[in-house]
Amino acid sequence: MTMFTFFDHTADLGIRAESDTPAALFAECVRGLFAAVVENPESIRETESESIGIVGEDDEEILFNLLRTLLYRFETEGKLVARCEIVLVCAGLTVVAFGEDFDPARHVPSHEVKAVTLHGFEIRSTMHEGDRRYSAEFIVDI
Image (cartoon, rainbow, N blue to C red; front, side, top):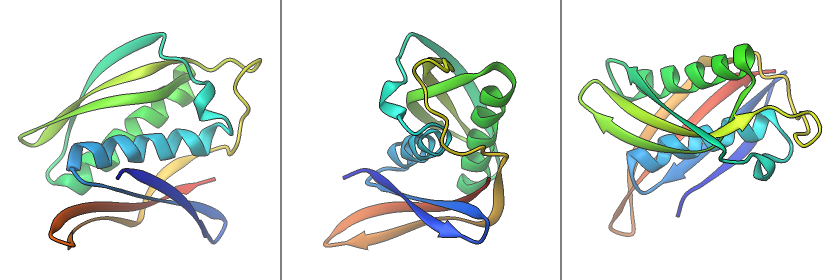
């Protein structure tokens, strides 16, 4: 089961995600980020796609760089992400982001997400009823 939830954080917004694979966890974190950006993320159409390479020294840095890159694309180009496919590689990942440009006629802004912060940024791996589960928690500055 893959899912994300929001949690309150002093003057900011926290996002918690969990999944059964690291790649699915990263994709769920992206879903959570864009659900913080627009109230109606289900309205984001998959009209275009872009492949982006992300690098980092460990999973936390790779996820942080992924979220930061996609947020930057939204801030500078208006690119919303509906869904993404993640392929983890040594020292990074390749993401294919499916989405469209922000359309104020269809997309309702939720929060002005200014940044993904390193404060409280964490990825965990645990065993649950014999199955490995992955979870992440991060805070966005709003």
